[in-house]
Image (cartoon, rainbow, N blue to C red; front, top):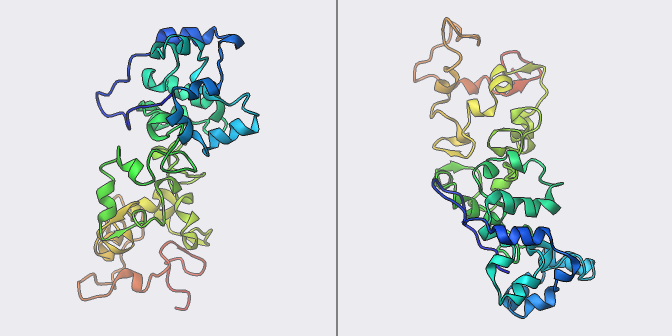
Length: 299
């Protein structure tokens, strides 16, 4: 049985009305109502060929073709078969709400995706089969309908142009994927980020030199995180900085203000254009073990 669904839940999207008759019949199914995968193959041979080699089919072999079959997901097929392929008598993810389709998948996969119900995808009615092809997929390892990032771009159209900017994380080049940073199946943190106890735990998995701990911490890094100075996906400036001039970036905090809690610019400094960048002297801006004002340790 072919599983077909919308690629994403756009505003105004509604699923095909649930097939209540099929659901009621499956709930009352007895062993005699199961016909076996061989019976399914007589009509759905093209799907059976696609099914060969994916993780679900491997489970079928491991269980001696007894436990993991077409009917493990689609339910008992006797009524569907004897009804001449009546679609109302078989479970089909395209004919049920996203939540019901997800519950079918989570019957086996809940242990790995325990937080899916809290994810933005679940809340937006983007079901498992919106991204995954149960029988075959472009990404064989995870049975995705398309490889990353093309799959994600189908819904996140606002993100795709960002990776075309002059400076960006190497997603388009295939050196990173969206799921390196985001967990599509749900996390406690915003935007499904794969964070640990603090925001920057994600960034420092790659940028370990900024992680610390340091004797002298930069307050902005500890309280506001990497995002206070850097764009996460891409930007027009080197190092994905939010300002084209590093002095301007520093002066967002380090300038005289009645509400400022950061150290202000000393009187002996001049911020005129002909002077060099702050980071020529204050090189250890993420934190330092030797200087409270983040000077180069050799100075």
